[in-house]
Image (cartoon, rainbow, N blue to C red; front, side):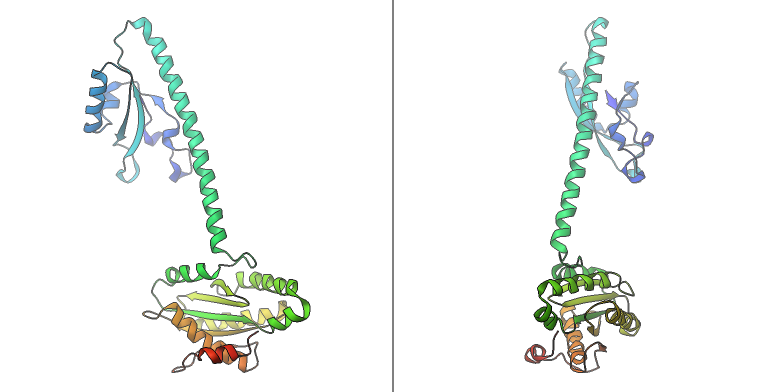
Amino acid sequence: MSDHPPSETPGPEAGGRPWWADNRLVASASTWWGRVRLTAALAVLAALASLALCWFVYLVTDNMPQGRDAWVLSVGLPVIAPLTLAPPLILFLLTLLSELQTRSRMLEQEVGRRRVVEQTLERLVSTDDLTGLANRRAFFQRSDALAGGGRSTVALLDLDHFKRLNDLRGHAAGDEALRTAGRVLADAPGRPFVGRLGGEEFGLLFAGMDPAEARPHLEGLRARFAETTVVTASIGVAAWAPPQTLDDALARADGALYRAKTLGRDRVEQERPGEDAPPADRRLAAPRG
């Protein structure tokens, strides 16, 4: 029979090898029986009574973190033959255990490989490939969780004269401007959560901050765009708190952004009390870009 006390080998929580990866023979049958659940022990007794090679799985009940149980594969063989057959039987069991350890390591490697693939796929579906920021879908999905139902600030940032840059210098120049914007936003003051919402428009979430706290960070961000990129940025700011939705807050931030554009661009404007978001036709007519 085989087993390895969980406490002898640090588990994954401690950064070591899994305790079940280094099986050893248990020297005492009483030690083995003392570790199994009654239901598993009865199954083992039934297997032994059949006088056949038996494979059985049991639950370890001692030395596990937080009192957790663990599944352990055990191999048992009732020995009723003369003692001369004992060495071959023991050799067989040791060989079988070695094979199980090899398969266990292969399984670990395959699980690790699949985890890397899953993480890569998740990154691809949640990241904007041009800027490296969160895409629109990920921005909306994660913002609710990051805000945690508390008071926060959202902002809309739009690159100024972006359409003119595309028209005069080509889409390659426009793409490079977006990549540069992505690098600036990834290191934005105040460490907001940032996503590209579409075109040259970006969303920013300052979780746990009210607009008065976020405003200096946004002014610093606006100044950084003016100093380090080929285009300036206009920013609209709004508070966000339950029961409002993120869409509601972004609509009010869009109204402030509309005002920033009409007042000359390259500025930060905050929503005003009682101010409604501009109608869709006015937003479309605003001097975007």
